[in-house]
Image (cartoon, rainbow, N blue to C red; front, side, top):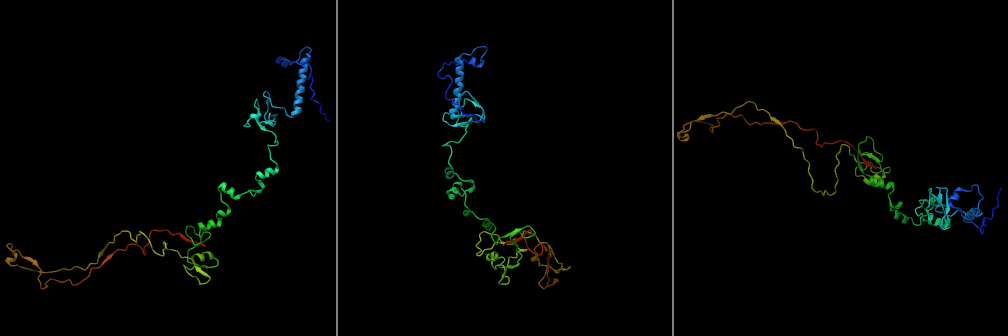
Length: 317
């Protein structure tokens, strides 16, 4: 059943005699005695005062002696705001608790919250996904980020990093995606229009109208091209230092002959020795005119090449 609210504003013994019992008496309570009416008046008056206080404020005003319980106790501060205890404590004035260590504001009140219109005007709505920004450009500038128009698309990045006509060396057996092996094949000008627009007929005109050739780099060493050959310091081709050994062919056993002559005493001096010489009459034996051939041993293979390993050249289309 519903109870009618009594008038708690008329206090018991508000004009009568009242005497506050001592602390010891309050703790002891009544014994075998007749309570002094002044004490009883004081007790009833205090109860009525508290009831009237709660009736008037709705929530009791904070005091320094009560132990407030965490997440259960509510009080009204001297500023008129209702606070809720954050942790169990006593003698912590909520109005002075600036760090909200002991108290938090329990309810939103006028001045502590915004209307819907005020909130919509001040804050972004999550479901709008940033479309309600007043200036997207300013927001990007503040965040130091680019817009979609300021950055490259995936295809643009791929085109920059992997342009049509780029030639790479590839270690796999099959052609990588987007590439053709540089084997000189004839391909369609329309199917591979981007590649045709890049290299044209530089490596072959195909049938002259609908096809063209890609480079044939099989078993080739690639060098840098230059239309002017305006090169700086360079080194010409060179063989590694090596030796050739060989022998001459034999002409067979043969000899050259002559006759001894005696010189005069004047020619030979005091020694008087005889010398062996060849006269001018051609009396020596003649081996005849002949040649000596010189044969070297073979060095190297069938071609000149540097040390190398074969990889597949592929061109981007």
